[in-house]
Length: 188
Length: 225
Image: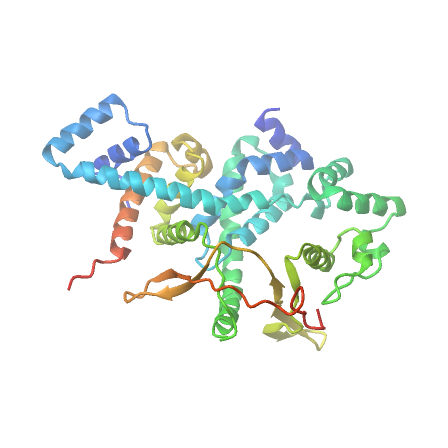
């Protein structure tokens, strides 16, 4: 079944078609949410909200050719609107976590497997968050299973040449940020 | 911010094309010509290759949470009944499908037909095993029960931590609180977070010491668990 058939069936209320479409696109949707969410907001929670918004609004989609742009718009709007609410709640949770961390009876047990890699990845994603918004989304989308400039163009509606420039600039800026935050060698 | 390309942009684009494995022979020629005038471009290329490799891993890790997020089609009334049943059978599992089928048979919703679910610390009720999972409380009770059976969950702390309380229209309070559930896992080693002189966090391995032999087979749990 072609994607436009799937989109037509999904917007007509076919849950199976909608589920298949979501499975096909959810990873890049996650990258879009990651690019637009407030720093403290939780990605998985926001994706749940995006999934719910897709279900609620899918019947409004009339142009099957506009599906990717529509899905991106739902993701961006949800990331920004829900993210703001979540950030406030996260602040409260962080307070609670700080209280728990201060508890002398509490021990820190951390699984060492992948700790370093996870820490490096976390820092890198944080640095991406410091890129100008215009570069962030293009840089992240390019990393999702090697999305091509054409595929990113179909999602963002921007010309491929603009996307290529933004990725190249974004990566240079990211390298500069990484060098700025890298630990400096201590000289005696 | 302008998207008009400069000489620096052209250099960055060439590097990006090589890093992405998309450089044409013409791109390579242009890059070599640039390198003839400025050898630093090779170091730049190597750095960008490293960065790209790490970034791919980081982004793939971050977006992999999407695999856990399914479309909640059953929460939307406009879905056709046949599709709804299919989704329940394939996505939410046979328990949810059974509850949807039962609701259609009696012409009401699952919540109206089922007794209240067990909540709180007493989650190991046999009612939770016999009934489908319809609410978050049902799911929690099931999680606690299965977790205790497998040994991964020791129990829930008897107290919750209140984060926020707001007076509501009914004269009561809306409360946001933190549940505390105690789990058990096995790891190969234990690390403790520490901070170096530059204020950066790192992990220090903790030396393992053989545990003291317990008197019985296992240490007793608090009575409340």
